[in-house]
Length: 324
Image (tube, one colour):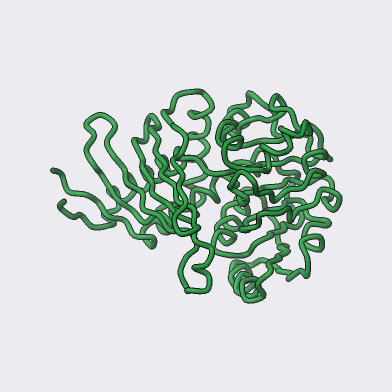
């Protein structure tokens, strides 16, 4: 058995920088929406009240990735990450295991990259404020990656936890942003050009009545069937609604499923990010409209990010090899 490359979260941070990963994730989405990947729906189970998923995909040019991931909100009180995961990479031709890597950082990196792809094709002209609702672990990566394609100096932040907002403020200011801590989601989103929801909410925290125009809304939370981060008015105002996968969002999030079943949103108005990135669908119709990107996360992102990290690690001599 060939040796297995092990990559830590720190390795991944160094290898998968925005200028590299955004392009890799964009290509993976185009492949997915072109029907070139093998990506079955994730397997989901609930253990001790917490969400667990097994995600697998083959992406041509990258390989086969398999991730085991969990979301444990109570870990905030334990001083542990709320999202933990391990990602395995395999050679698609021989089936040989190639690498195993820390999946929490990989998930945050590839999720940030997907949001950046949406901003690249859907956000209004750069320069307006960015609002972030939910300032935990994922929010830092969202800011890093989205700001790589959407240039701004002002960030507005809201979280129900004061310590989370304060920690995020310090982080963002170290990156050179001017940060306002807001007292409510409404205060954060009013006047914002890009609104990012990265919370663990199960009820809407972004209300369409308070969105400015133009604006681009990115929602990566509310990832179960009965949870919503966006209210009906967001859906009504959206001139373009884009998702990572039509199949996945209908199975996994109330943000799309509930409006569709209520007749507020027709699936023929819902485009995939890969279709927008390839130019087959529009990301924005007017200069003043509101656009929405809803993501639940796909295994293609893990496979592409893992393969990119593996390739770069071999080139740079990073990581360590172990024998199984």
